Image 1: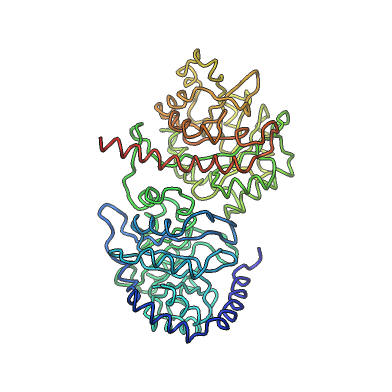
Image 2: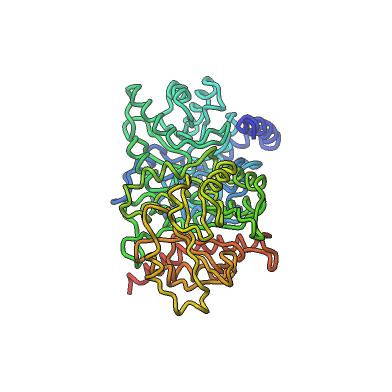
Length: 561
């Protein structure tokens, strides 16, 4: 991608000069006067961000971002209605609404920001409005205030120190706050020398768009080392990228951060209120299965044969991409294509190597509660980035290890008759498929006997799939989903495949309560194995995403009756 930051900044310089010719600065100044006559002065941003949190919630402010697209991910959620999304952010308790106004790469506009300001008008303790853009000229500050901003983002990596100081002063003179973004300790020193007191640490390096979640922690430590305090009476510190779980929030709260900015994760959540509560509230709502939390099911799209299919699934929210490495399958992928797909998955997740093994090591404590702890690790890994799974049938451990290393797999799925013991010799996290008869033949299935086959300490995950006339996987036929519920009750949470479609996946989730669902033939062009119907992929993943809000509503209704 090259240095995308420089490319965007160059374009914004051209944009500013073009805008000046259409709307002179004097005209923006008049617009500010008329706007403030209607809306009043800008909020005191630091006061708003440092206001006490809700009782029982993390003592950390949320900046919720409206972002349609990005250079690294392409389209994120172009279909969302801005007014509805902003209202859901405010209703969920956001202290700040961040609005991308850059048009080319992020598909934003000043009109978006004005619309967001209109939504929050009249709200008690309304959220502040942040202009998120690549600001390199005082003219853009005038634009920001004229279109409703209370605060603007100033990126240290874009600005010489003298210009940064000039822009901070000009921002304050307009009554707005300046959120000064840094990505390193060196940039922190520049921000502090410019007397910045609201500092955002971008865990994503805008030069490369790679994410390092420890960046905020390093910067927080450096602030204290310089004799400055963090929090309400010192530097107000925000973590700006990569936050996807309550564990992330706790981590940044402990290091001294006062707030978090969350964009893509909320844009794709499908249920802002529940997602914000899960992020900021220590208590987790639970399902009818007692201590198993009601959290979004994972979605794996399997039988992916082309890079374009992988990208489409990722953009629609797939957590895992499955590549078939069994030669007898019509969905078999040659090694070079498999490598290209795996590379695409890693790049989309902004990572260069595996992330699951390290998370597994932190979660596992011997074989105690083996499957549950493995699932917690899988969820955490998938919240960070999508994973790529290689599906094998009746290969040796050596063959699978070699293929996984060459291709760049995150997990190895055993889909033949390999058993469990082979997992000891596989160097990668494993998914063991158990093959069940289709629903027409399921009356004689002894679920308890199947449970007895499962051994802790070997395969990390269990996948339930349908076998039919000797075909294992890709049958397009469902098994009895109640068997998955039996596994869940036995604290062996599993993935579920077999005959899933956009039309039946919500019912499957409601009956089986699996960790996640795995689809292949159900999102293909009929009669063309390996050819994905992208509309079906979109519909399937949307149904999975929407399931959580439906289930949450059901639980809330049951509590009221």
